[in-house]
Amino acid sequence: MKITVVGTGYVGLVTGTCFAETGNDVTCVDIDVNKVTKLSSGQITIYEPGLEKLFERNLKEERLFFTTSLEEGIRDAEVIFLALPTPPGADGAADLSFVLKVAEQLGKLMTDYKVIVDKSTVPVGTAEKVTAAIAKNCKSPFDVVSNPEFLREGVAVDDFMKPDRVVIGTNSERARKVMGELYAPFVRQGNPIIYMDEKSAELTKYAANSFLATKISFMNEIAVLCEKLGADVDMVRRGIGSDDRIGKRFLFPGIGYGGSCFPKDVQALVKSSEDVNYDFRILNAVMDVNEKQKLFLLPKIKAYFNDDLKGKHFALWGLAFKPNTDDIREAPALYIIDALLAAGATITVFDPEAMENVKQIVGDKITYAEHQYTCLEQADALIIATEWSVFRTPDFHKISAALKHKAIFDGRNLFEVARMREMGYHYESVGRAAIA
Image (cartoon, rainbow, N blue to C red; front, side, top):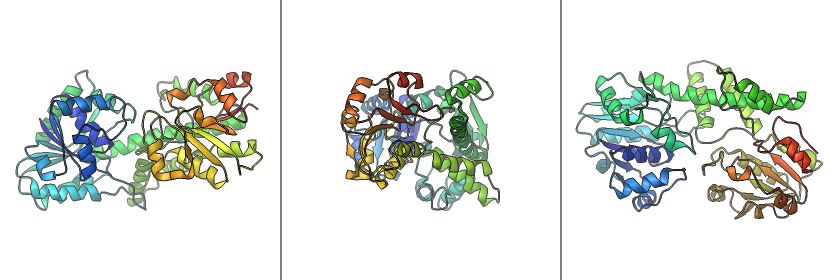
């Protein structure tokens, strides 16, 4: 099948590459000339484990193409995916300007039947707006389908190739048949394609991410309560996670969620609720809890240094909002950096993938280390903000030799409290007993 993907960001590039991997001819369109030039020459523009190998193979076998021309990109395409940015506006609502602008252009260019697929995360009613924008200038038949993505950064290739489910929102039998054929290779093991109307599909994505964000924030609240009551959040997590009705996933406490999805999707669902005069109180609380949680370690750090961080130097491990990605959008590490700098501290950071992205935002306000252990040199304490695997079993002898104080403030609960006690560290984490 001939497919076009408009937008070569995270979702667009993963979508286009994975569809090419199953034998489709895929053309990806983007207005960024520099990005298209890099991609066409074989230079991948995002970090995602497993993607580069598929990207290189399908580019070499001429199933994957890149262009800046929308007209060229959609020529002979049967399905056109819109994987465009929908950033939050000042009021929290998703900005649909990129999506609707492309929809208007498509209406002027299409001459035969095509299925237009909203792959971007968009609010309820977007399919109707896209339909109207295309119809203004289009004389050929078309259908607009909602097909939300459920990709987790760090495991996106597996999520796409072996999805838990595929959600397709359409009331058109013709579009349903096309989409069913397209996704057939991905659901051979019985994972379902769930068909529904467009509005339900649009809401499904927001509801899923908002529910997961709620689980995270709930456990972060439990972690705070554990510290006040003398309980251990790890024990509580295991106790409730064994209940099938609750499940084990998304129960790990920490310093809040970040990334490109949870923050903006929760915010957008709250805004959609406000637009129909509904007060979504739970999600308002989720946003409030998460905002505070990002700086959960700061009072602990200040207390250890007698409320005076001026002149103190900190090592910070982890900048990405989660491991196995270079995405720093809404990353808790950025909030920690701002707070420490405001308090007069200096910082050296290390992250396996995200440092270049942070440099573009923070610049030379902080120092960037080439290695996780050189990051520690002359630091008064170590702060951990991202649970990269390489941080889980470090050389504690190197850590203690480099730090001025054997002090670790762990926002991801990487180490066992008892072991840290045995080694003589001042160790503070989230929802577990501190040791001095």
